[in-house]
Length: 262
Image 1: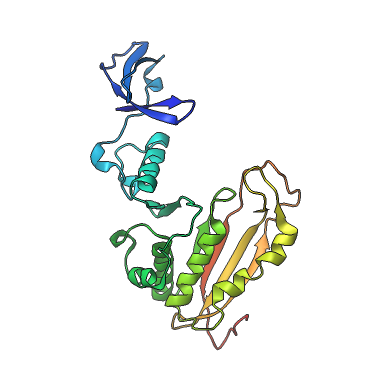
Image 2: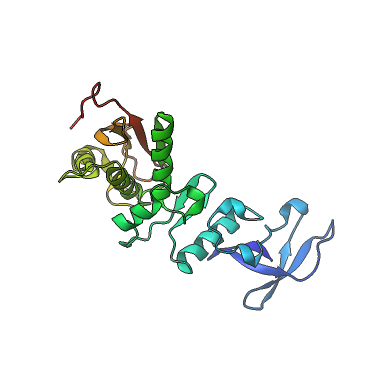
């Protein structure tokens, strides 16, 4: 099985009907609907990307695929999203997320409890697993940790940051009437009033990067948080697709030496 470009579906799978020989100028392929096509090749560098075995379809870590290329990644993400109803997939230590544009019941406190204290490899891919890895490394080593949340306009960066802070608020014991993530994100409307602009994919797209710093005490409890902006896109270009990431810092502070910013 190989992948060939398609003007509508971007990539479609096809079965190779004959072996390739050096110097051959075309391949005889059969599409999934049974149609036979001739695929032109000038050299071995023009050969279509090979497909992965069926046993690896829907793999939760892209690095486990035998062949890792664009069509393999897109197909695996599509299978996990449509067939497994999973919006998260690992790519090594990176978590790939697909915005479902819908509310999913996978962010409750019972899910937080399930991921608390677990290794990334022991659980299904989830934003809570990444947050747990950063939190546990910070508490054990006493060193600051960073989580970078990046993506295109409308990909769900702000919501992902909110779920990450919600996880820290629960495991870090922020048992206050107004949670930490709500206080931090409450400043969004003010910043958005001067930093948002319409783009081709989002009518209300933030054109600046957000730097969120969360302070933890010696026992791993949240004692405060700061938010500031950086790399403000002053020109507010409508058609620019490059997005600035969200950088989240998990910082260990001494509760006696550093009072809460709140």
